[in-house]
Image (cartoon, helix red, strand yellow):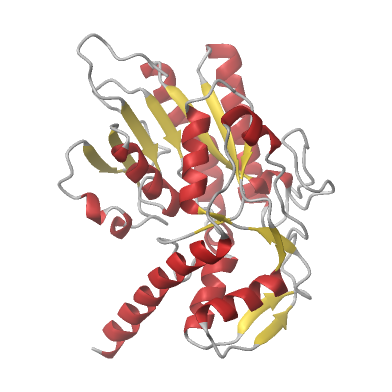
Length: 328
């Protein structure tokens, strides 16, 4: 960890994408642990609502800016956490060029800030760099099976390039870097129309609509609660490893199993319907977290039932608010 100067000032963290789902939870954790936090977000997929509770909080500052532009901060910076990027299929399929730009130009600008400030840098990468994996579960030394010109290529290749650029800055400029490969994560502050499976299933179930399962439902995912994930990422930043680390929950569900669990947890009367599998949709996704357990002493602690309970309460409130405003 960077040393505090003689004045014993607070550590300063910059979080790009700080108004997003995961970025905002990271901001909360950093503030709780005594950091001053500067959140940067252009609000294309992030939301002021995710950080509204921090209005007037001492030590927190929000800057609305596109991270692909030059980042100027006239203050010391100890940590740069690069979370800026569209992260759901509905977003990066709608914003392919912006997704590629934030993964390339945005990562370049964020790394430049870290280099200029002699700060430690963490890249929020993704399990999507493994593509439709031929190795299961996925370990960090697996190179992946990605279609670079497919519909998902804009996100997959943006993150793969971001990892390569991060390691180049580490090797050539000596920047202290960390790379986290984030697997499927869920929790409060996800958007209703996010497009990922948890908000899709929950928003359908809470309105007693039919749950849409793609393919035959045999494809698998593993789900990590957001606060578990952020704790693992924090430990990674404070560790000494510059190489990628998987953070996620190794408990695996088929999409059909997960749909039934959501129906049970919500008490919905929903039925399940099947639609064709989207292009390049991964058939299997489960992290090998041996490296996280060994190097960080981290493994997920919050059971799916508890995490779903908290997430359902959040979505129920959002759906009720939306329907109420629609009637007014």
